[in-house]
Length: 306
Image (cartoon, rainbow, N blue to C red; front, side, top):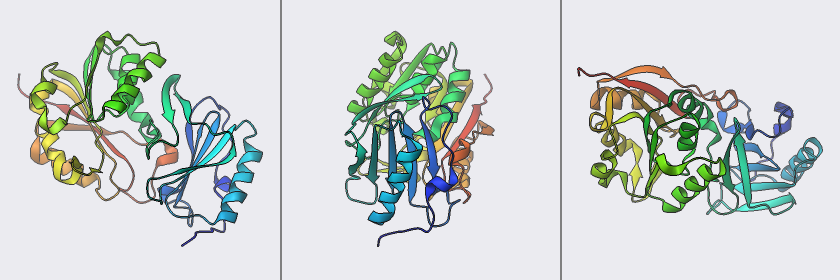
């Protein structure tokens, strides 16, 4: 089924004043715009990326591209990613075939790869979580579980963290993470990269601890690896072995099928010593009209008698 909405995403956002900053321009997945729930648009200079979660009508898509060209004459490339198709392929709709970009967020830089994989290298909705970590990691030892390309690690080192331990099964993602640090001229002496299965490597993960801050940002599902509805408690129950008393725990949940109550319930059952401090709200553009559907990020203090 081809979707041809009566309205256009450009009716609902204005051209940003700062084109250096990478950002989500339009977030149809937030369910605020009827008929456009399948469309997202990102600006990562000098490119625009349109993501579709359902097949668009070709004429409607071309009209959208033409509108974007008029609003962003600086765009050297406008590309579409079809998350609705097998393999999430990319298509260049305007300009150059640009495969490598550098996203800029609060003056920090991150490598972005278009056309290679479903995820491009940085989750823009996690901006506020990275900012909290940057503001609160000075002199601290940070554990970054499911680190992907080490966005949290870059933020922590920029904030003066003493050490960050990045853990992810994907060694290519960790390699990109290492390059992200180099892109920001970071000293790598205090940055560790562990390409291991988290659920089978607790002893190795524990060794550089105990940690002042634990960050867990798992995928919702990876075949043969992670089913977060089944597995999140396996992480939460390890907190006493990993985190210092009075340490911070940031738990993230990005499944639209699991709400806030699921995450809070898992913590209450499997590590009741974690006291809820706050929910880190998503950037405004990512806030969802349907409660519990968008990214959930909660901050806890691990409180025990010493």
